[in-house]
Image (cartoon, rainbow, N blue to C red; front, side, top):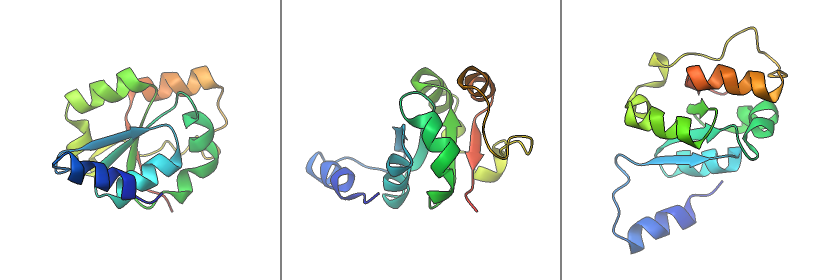
Length: 119
C-alpha cells in the first residue's frame, strides 16, 4: 500500500497528480492511491469483488466502487471522481456483509458509484 512506485513514475514522467484517478482491483491498489493523495476507484472485476467483501475496511479513506473498468471510465467522464465522498451514495445498509452473488453485485455497482468510508 505504499505509493513509492506511483510517485516515482509521476516524478520521472513529470506528471501532475492533481486530477489523477487511480483505478485498481485490490484494496492494496486503493491504499497506494490514497497514500499518493489521489481519488481511487475499486473495480469489481479481477480481485475486486473478493477485496470489497473482505478488505474494504482496510482502506485509509473513501473510495469509489464500480462494476468494471468501463463503468470506472464512465464515472470519471461524468466527473463523479471529483465529488466529495458525502455526495456519493453510501453503501446500502442492506448489504452489511456484501455476500450477494457476483452478478447482483455488478448490477448494484453498475448503476451506482458508491463511495466507501471505512470504519
